Image (cartoon, rainbow, N blue to C red; front, side, top):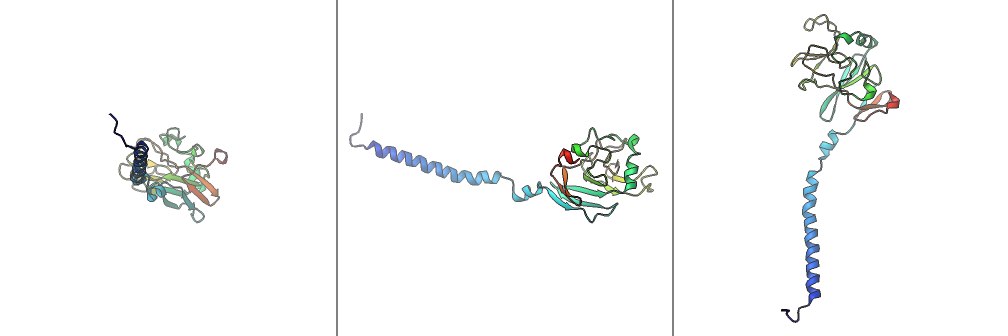
Length: 199
């Protein structure tokens, strides 16, 4: 049974208007919800590449920067250190870095683009402790075999000055080498990969 005098066009207009208002209202409610799912400015900055000026790093000096909430070491190695690295292969678990985390352009004996500059994430690959930089040769607490490197006091892992792990220690892999590239000879960016051509 149909009621006379009902204007169907007004009813359809009201239904359409209500749908539009409901959709706009849902959009206003959804925007803050979706916005809170975006990473914060601080979180985005933590993952951003880091610019580093290495012009003032003396041979033997190690500096630390932070990238993605992790300590990153930058070490200026002397020619003597580079010579020593070539003599350690028989003492290392992964001397050619075949089972370690580094960009292809750092998969070499010195694990670097520029032999003298070593860059690594300063966290032990065993349980994530931060090893100490021990450049001295044969200190009394580490013994005569120690040729300088990184020592993790938590569980006794040894790494050479290319971040390569020694055999017989708990750490399973070499220290991680993060992606990095040189803008100039004295300016590098950690967090962006160098092209394979520059390696």
